[in-house]
Length: 71
Image (cartoon, one colour):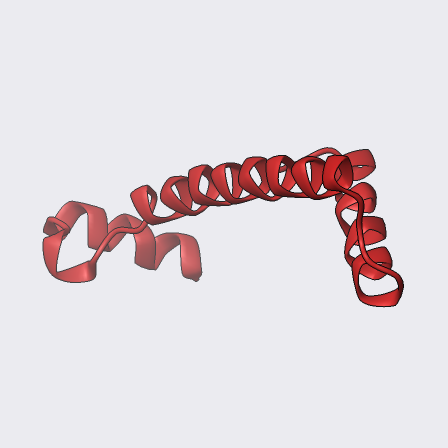
């Protein structure tokens, strides 16, 4: 995920945008930070999706191993 420092900056810029508006440089910075955030989010989400296994696609041995782990 994105560094805490960058997330804090995104939030600071969002609050400032609502309160008083942003300068041209701040808008560019906000856009770049948001783009980076979205890219990282998509990477993490794809990683989660790639680890999902459907029960219908598993072999009998894999199903048995999962049941043993649950008990």
